[in-house]
Amino acid sequence: MENKINIEDIMAQIKREIKEKGLTSDMLSFEDVPYKKPVQAAAETGTSLSAANEALDYMNAHHYVQPYKPIPGNPVKVFFKKVIRKLVKFYVEPVVFEQNSFNAATVNVLNVMKNNAESRPDDNTGELLSRLETLELAQKELRSRIDSLERENSALREALGKQETE
Image (cartoon, rainbow, N blue to C red):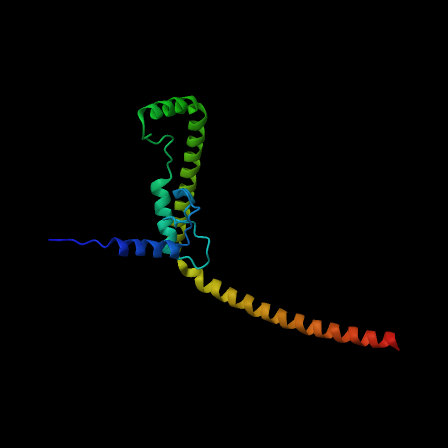
């Protein structure tokens, strides 16, 4: 069983992907390379309810922030990093705990809002649609009245301009 790997094809594919993504050689680190995050804030219009549910599930699972992450690397560097970590512990931990409290409260409020929205009967949808239709009709009527008043205003201004010239 002989597997032939064509490195030229692989490199051509990688170069094509780099070109499609718009990456350049001045992007030196992974932090500089643009990428789509797995969960993004849904600020766009027309965002689906399932996307909001996914985001809320993600928030429920990840609202707690660890104050310290494992330190990999050279044992000497790890030692100094641990010393520095102990020196700034008094400053870092309270901030992280406050952030965790805020995150938990936010997720709790969002869960309550979601449950409230789900448990609410949709009986008033028809009423809201009829009110919306009434408001849209009133808005159209007001627009037509504004247009006619603007035309009347311009006609009166022209008549006034003619009287002033006489």
